[in-house]
Image 1: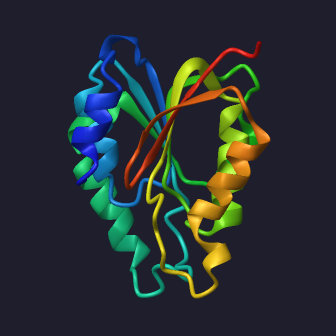
Image 2: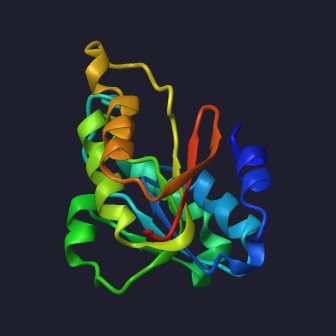
Length: 178
């Protein structure tokens, strides 16, 4: 939640944010922020809420999902909880489905971050924002497994973006292809 002031500062046009996609919702704190700050928006929360992984092997995901539900209880008409892995979600998502903001905070390994970005980019509106959380996350023993590697790979693959901000997050804005 330390990044909230930055997101609000860089994505000011709140009235034009109608649809937000969040990959990785965990306990719903960022979900709550998006719905509160962008109060005319609808949020899609994609998280499998299941087994632990290398990052959170001690986490009880039954508790995590209950916390998510409790944290968003008052906002239930403005979001959809999608209990799936992001790859499965994107595979089933209509090609016509577009979002104004896409927040990537799912699995933090570089390959997952890259795949989430590639899949999500197709569904980001022109002038929409993609936010990569945990840009400087550095918890994997093999440094090539950290998110920054997947993000760099993604930014080399696409070129129709503008960097809006870089701090502990990276915010990109999608531009029209020329």
